[in-house]
Image 1 (spheres, rainbow, N blue to C red):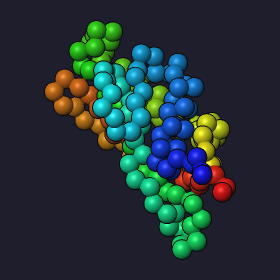
Image 2 (tube, helix red, strand yellow; image 1 turned 180 degrees about the vertical axis):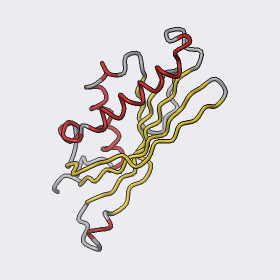
Image 3 (cartoon, helix red, strand yellow; image 1 turned 120 degrees about the horizontal axis):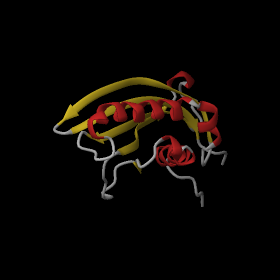
Length: 149
């Protein structure tokens, strides 16, 4: 029986491992994977492999290759005691740290847990505020393949 996990799970765990390797860039920030009921506090980064589809450029012969849409959510509190009046600046520094971690594609490839990551890039970054929380939704495209059978 194969022990291969789903490509979305592989993607979340692999990116999560890379974030853990680079945790010094996000001190005090909780990293959560996927949709979970785990109790969460702020500041927080959520890594969610939202969709996975056959790599369209490969047509009918995709052979386990996937295009995965990954959404990285970055949340911070405007009332964070550690940042005081600089909460927005601290939030944006966290966003830049995510850019840096995800932008190191070779490092991210080296953290892949099953199969192989081919490539990845940022698609968009949307910033917003709700109540007393700052939030960014950063979307990435990742190309990856299952391990050989």
